[in-house]
Amino acid sequence: MRRYHQSWLPAMFDDFFDNEWMKKTNATAPAINVIENDTEYKVEVAAPGMNKEDFNVHVDENGNLVIAMEKKSESKNDEKEKKGRYLRREFSYTKFQQTLILPEDVVKDTINASMCDGVLCIELPRKSPEPKSNNTKVIEIK
Image (cartoon, rainbow, N blue to C red; front, top):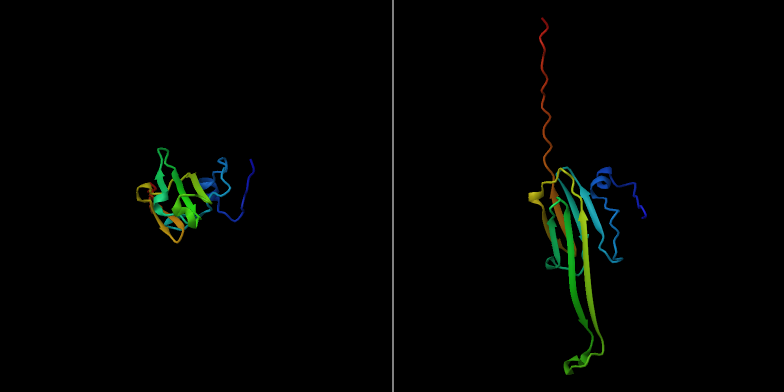
């Protein structure tokens, strides 16, 4: 297995989202971006020509985010096709699945996804950090 390390990625991305043990078997697998800020993680999946019906996004029994895509399409190039004879016809079938290990601070019940301009966007809200309590105790000296 090859290890591709991009030094600019934060350690949290490496720890939680790194699935290098799972090789991408399809060279045309979509590119995935992961963005982090104080309130959420955002996963962007390049999906030109796809629509929301082509995707299945869910959290599995192990608490991992599963992004699956399946697209069946056919393209017809034949003016004489109306007479019933194919001169050229192309079928296409694309299937992709990626599992991402989620950080523990993701609120899994409030994950949502949307499609916009050929990009699947998945928003993963983060739990608010618990405020540090000032539990100092003054000990009286007797």
